[in-house]
Amino acid sequence: MMNGLKHGLWIIVILVPTTLQAAGIILPSCSVSATPLNFGIYWGTSTLVSTANITVSCNLPATTRVQMDPGLYSTNFTTRKMAAGKSRLNYNLYTTSARSNVWGDGTGGSWTVTGSKLTVYASIPGRQVVSPGNYSDTVVVTIIW
Image (cartoon, rainbow, N blue to C red; front, side, top):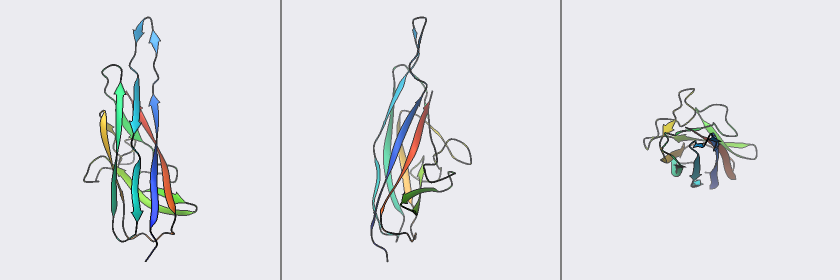
C-alpha cells in the first residue's frame, strides 16, 4: 500500500493571433481562462477522475479551435506524465466524459475541440506504484481562430 499523493495540473494558455488593427478594420481577438485541474489524493487502488473548464471569449464572432501540448514530462499524447522530483505518475486529458478521445493538437491520434465553453475530462489510471509526493505538470493550451 502506498501513502496518499497530492497532485495537480497547471494549464498555461497561449493565444494566437493577437489583436490587430489595419485600415480601420478591427480583427477578432480572443481571451481565455481556465479553472485549475486538481485530482485530490491518489491512493493507487483505482482510477481517479477530475474535470476543469476552459472559457474562450472573443470580441467578434469567431470559431475557435482549442488544442493542448503533451505537457512538460511527455513527448506524445498517448500517456501524459506528472512529476514529483524524479517520480512520474501517468494521467491524460480527454475531450469527452467517456474519456476515450485524448485532447491534443490533432496529431498522433489526438483530438482538438471547437467551442467557447469547454470541459477538460482527466483521469489517472489506477494500480500505479509511485513514490509519495506532490505531482504536477504544465500543459500549454493554444487557441486558434
